Amino acid sequence: MNIKLGVWKGILGQGLAPRELQCVLAVANGKTVKEAAQILGMAPSTTAKRIASAMYKLGVNRQAALVAAAFAQGIISFAGVGSPTPENQRDESHDGVFIA
Image (cartoon, rainbow, N blue to C red; front, top):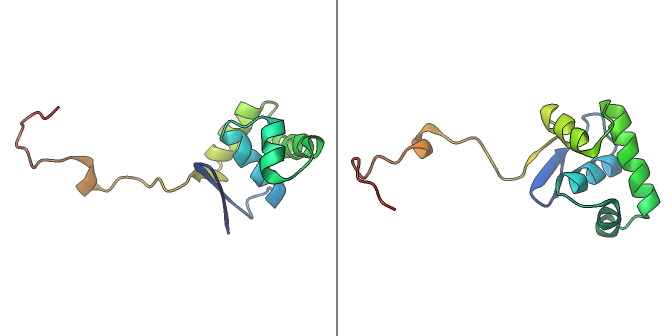
C-alpha cells in the first residue's frame, strides 16, 4: 500500500509505521515540523517524535539524511515519475533540425 504526500509517495511495510512514513514524506516535501504537524493533524511534539523515530530506525541523525536513506532504501520515491522508455528518450522527428 502507498501513501502520497506532495510530490512523494511512500511504501508501507518497509520498516516504518504509517505515521512515521507520513512524517518522512512531509520532510521530503520540505515542510517544517510545525507545517507537517498542521498538514497531518498532529501536535508538533508528536510529529517531532515520529521523525526522530524514523531517523533512529534508518540509522541517521539529520532530516536530510532521513530523506536520502528512505529514498535509497526504496521506502519513498517521486510520485508519478517513472523511468523513461526508449521511445520517449529521443525525438528524431526533426532530422537534426534544432527547434528552440
